[in-house]
Amino acid sequence: MDYLRYVNIALDIFCIILTILPITYLVSNRRYRQKENLYFLGVCVSNLFMIAGDLPDWIYTTTPEASQKIILIVASVVFYVASAFILYFFIRYIVEYLQLTDQIRKICLLCAVVLCGIQAGFALISPFTGSVFYVTDDGYQRGPLFMISQFVPLLCYILFMILVAIYRNKLKRGEIIFFLLYIFIPLSSGAIQMAVRGIAIVNAGVTLTTLIIIMNVQFEHELTMKEQEKELAERRIDIMLSQIQPHFLYNSLGVIYHLCDSDPQAARKAINKFSAFLRDNMESLKKHGPIPFEKELNHVENYLYLEQQRFGDKLKVIFQIKKEDFLIPPLTLQPLVENSVQHGILNRKNGGTVIISTEERDGYALVTVADNGIGIEKAMERPSLGNHAHIGIPNIRNRLEEMVGGSLDIVSNSNGTTATIRIPLTEEEGL
Image 1 (cartoon, one colour):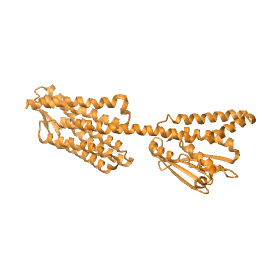
Image 2 (cartoon, rainbow, N blue to C red):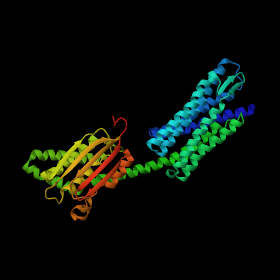
Image 3 (tube, rainbow, N blue to C red):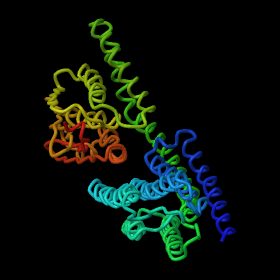
């Protein structure tokens, strides 16, 4: 038995060393700033504490001294509380990995808090009640409610299995296999250790599956994320180029040229607006996330000022801004407004009107761009308009969904076009 005890001590120490490896990886280059990595770091750190809490159980087979009893009691509490946090952080990790909807996310997190809270709660009261464990002169002993500490992880692993089964279409075949290994290896090792006292394989099982996930799932996931970031960067370049249409540059420079003779002060203002417009387009390449709507609106105002210098009274713009404190992907509103200007102004004798409005409704920020032009279909039929109609719409839809979970709906007919952006508000934005 002494030989087995030494093996268990060596195994725990080896598992501690192995657990430090993924922790070092996740901390390096601040990878933990991503939510998925942060939660997985929580899994690894909790596993480290669980193993450390398990060591005194094998070191102190008997506890004749009071100090040894205290160490063993504290270590046992740490072991069970840390095991609860492993389950909690892994639920947070898998929920984030699967990108579940808010409602399903809340249900899963509620289950995690309740189950892991039960595990941690019984661990904290056990030194006083002996419910899950107690310590005698013969060392650590299992309490009458020890099975609770085994039943809670079982329920958590069942929850993991259900999530993997329901959302298997979001996962690759390899990801499904490795996530199932994370479920079955700890369950199997826990069942063996529960049946045969003196074999410390739960820690080894959890450590092994943690390494499996970090090497086979998380590494590949990060590579995929980098590829998506590269595609997003290329898309941002395409978006910027699509916004700075040659016809707009030529027309704006032409307007400024004529203003230099007729109204130098207006020309200076137009140059400032033109440079601000170009600067905002260039800065959008550096943006990896959404920006305040107020900044996007200011960009649109610069664009419209230049177009109004060109069209004069033919272009009427109405702003009905009731909601501004929310985020929107950069270069989202401007292409919709440009579409409206093209559809609402070109080939109309009396010009047209563009209405830009925002409001809050049912937890969403609604941004509407409406015009009374000829409509997208007719614009596409006309050679003079076809190249400018429907500018950047697919890119706008993709970025709205990826960055803010938003959507874009467009209704167009011969009486005009209405584009509506819906962006879900956070609790702070909805206040």
